[in-house]
Image (cartoon, rainbow, N blue to C red; front, side):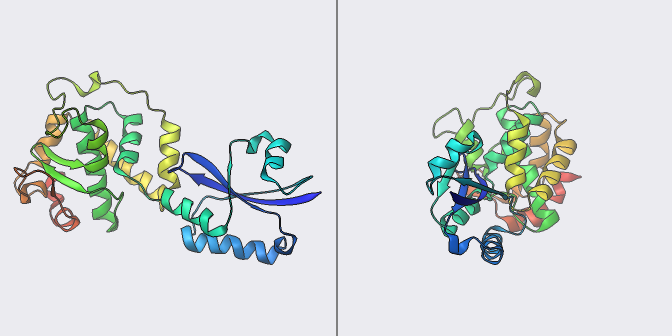
Amino acid sequence: MVKHYIIMSSSYTDGTRIALDITDGSLLNSQTITEIIQDIKRSCGEDVPLSTHLLETETDMWSSVAEYDPFFADVVCVKSVAEFSEKIKKSRVLSGLDVATYILSKVKCTHLSLEKLVYFAYADYLCDKSARLFEDTIYAFVRGPVIASVYETYKRSGDRYVEPLEHGYDGAIQTDVNEMPAKSRILFAKNGPEKLRSIDRTIETYGKYTAGELVARTHRDGSPWSKVDSSKAYQIIPDELIMKYHFVECA
């Protein structure tokens, strides 16, 4: 019989669970296993979600693990600690679309109001923690701040500016986003619980406003958006402007 010490996590970029399967007898001791886990945490963050499993099968093949327990049937086994860590690291970085998906699981939005809520979530977290909530670039469009991945997913007009459903109630737009997967995605990110709490506060504060009311806030004199020439396409709103002037949008 062959012992398998399995370290598991998730790769949201690949859309699957991943496993590091240790079968080499020379590595199957508490000191070496502890060092491997510490190495993963140094690379991916001390708060990285990991689970461990110990079982025995007749061979060292990963297929024997899946045959032994269907729990592992859809898990992708990676070949090295480095590859395992790299897949996790990529998944611990959020995109604006990840945040948008979570917001849609909590609030019915038009495209316009969704863009603004994602922006407010980013700005609130940035000003509170001096750190980025997600990695997308934020642009100044005519109708306010726009997040790259959210725009690319929900745009309706090709290369033209978005034409949102601005005349009508945001609640008329239905979504079927399941909250738990969207929430799990946020929690898996680096400092995930902290980020989730911040997003929830933003939703509680601004989720009740219509798209027009949100735009009115981002368009106030002195706001970060107002400091950028939005008449030119894809003008970046830098973090420095948001940190300095976001308070104008919050009052």
